[in-house]
Length: 269
Image 1 (cartoon, rainbow, N blue to C red):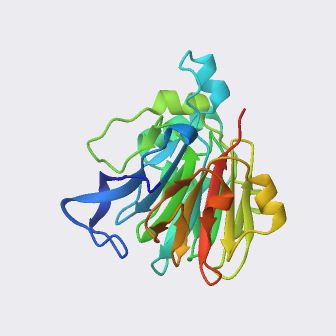
Image 2 (image 1 turned 45 degrees about the vertical axis):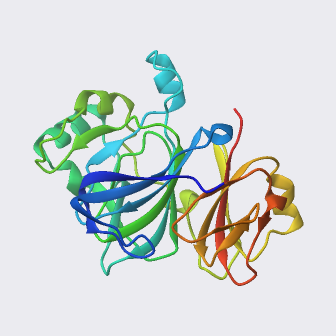
Image 3 (image 1 turned 45 degrees about the horizontal axis):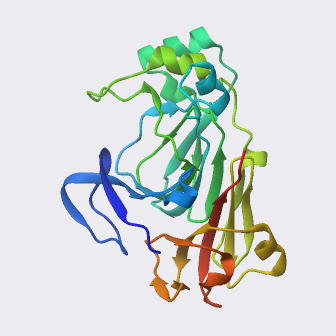
């Protein structure tokens, strides 16, 4: 079943989306969400398109939101860079440790942007963003994001845009530390099978061609299918790049031997 897309307007988005979307809008579109199906409602897949920097922000963990009395609304996410203009960057973590008071002060005076570590990126770069990590996305990026299905975001700094900030909330949950690049990043070229995420909240693999026996054994039950290059067929329905589909089981998917596809599945907790 192909999931219905939802175009989400963002001040930092694009007036015209690139292929395969080729959508124009009077207001910039920054994200395309694929509405989570009931069997996998804990997992959200989206595309992100940037013409300006996103706010400097963070997301709390499940443990923190439970302690706040908000239920499980934590958010861990990951980014696969699909396309990047020359010099495009992602801000993830800090150049040096920073305590809560200094973080709050840097957010209030705008210097927090310069304290982030800005990673230059290219197509195929992959980053896992644990909850509590302070982060931003620079202009010129097209990204596939897979995340826990929560929209709880605390903005620390937004470049003077007229949007709400949540500095006190963010300072209470944010991790003022450098990002562990070696542990949380990898590269997913079109020609390779790559295990990108294996817990704690979801698993994510890139397949170049069809799955081997080990991957098929790990993906029991419903999963999400996100073609990157070339179509796949799910229960007789063709799913193309720029779309996302629910498959009831991995054997219901006909993968192209010359294509590249992402598959994702939540891990029950």
